[in-house]
Image (cartoon, rainbow, N blue to C red; front, side):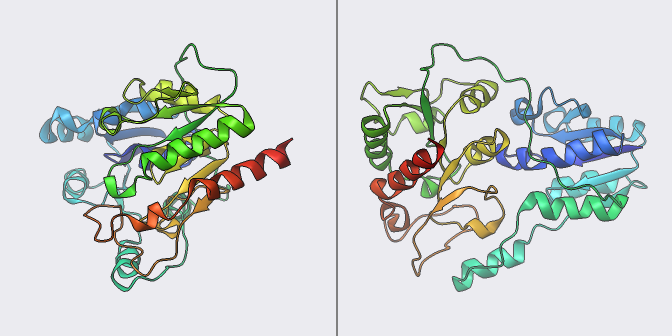
Length: 315
């Protein structure tokens, strides 16, 4: 049996799919093919349950031609957008499955400023797989493979994942700096800062207990750094899913979005403010009318108290 997964990005979305990838390859013993954006290939590179990759950059018609030769039995379209729908149609008579994404529920929450019933994308996607193949297995944890060693890290450190696809989702840099000072002073551990080159442009993190690696690491190096850290503090972005994959305590900062929107890790410690303007967007897109009040009101001292509480229990 051959199964095609279609998911073009982003990093966190792909990590959420890794439990399903494991089920297909390990339990169903199926040949799993993955169609994705090559930009995010490193996220899934080395996954032993994926037999073959196709990339959107190679062109639609070339991919369709090659995919039709594969004689695919099932197509799981996790994107549910125009391009992924076209791929699905051109691969008929393969059976097409398009798992729900609860888009209407999330949009209603944004319009009426209400909290929807909580769900997780890995679970609703897994429901589609379970119903299709009559699977009785429990959903496994997310998994990542082939980390690349990053040298000269301190023996004791935590990670601040300060990036985000949209500026409106980012906790202020000065809040991260203050939190780092508290962590270093009271817990005597250093802080590794992760993000991309655009995050680096925001400045900050000049004290010697910060190790600023924004824009300096590959995905595989990021995996290694988080795997060997004590805990992760992150915006609502892929740092959350990476931390969950390595079973790290994740302290998660929510602003314009909600934990109920499907990406919150199991066991993650959430910080948010119940303001009348929340939620204001599904993914954090758009401009804020209130100067990111939802994020600025989450104080570093508040986050540190939870981190310190975790350390006291651990020790």
